[in-house]
Length: 69
Image 1 (cartoon, rainbow, N blue to C red):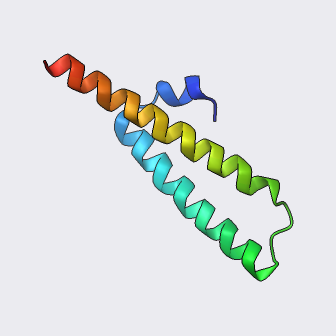
Image 2 (cartoon, rainbow, N blue to C red):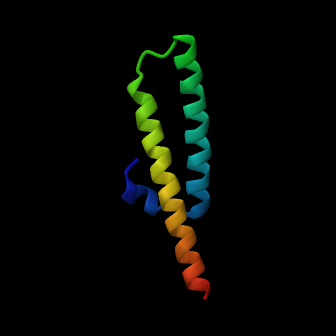
């Protein structure tokens, strides 16, 4: 998911996507540890998506704080 697409989501949707990405990352790490993971590049992609989500969540929180003042 690209950053522009994430920015269009509501804060609740961003939080939901973060939970899904964390769960997927956990599952991928588990598969990697047991030797069952075939596509190891997926680990990197999920980490990047999670980083994007965290960054945009911070931006949205900052905008809400700025708007409340």
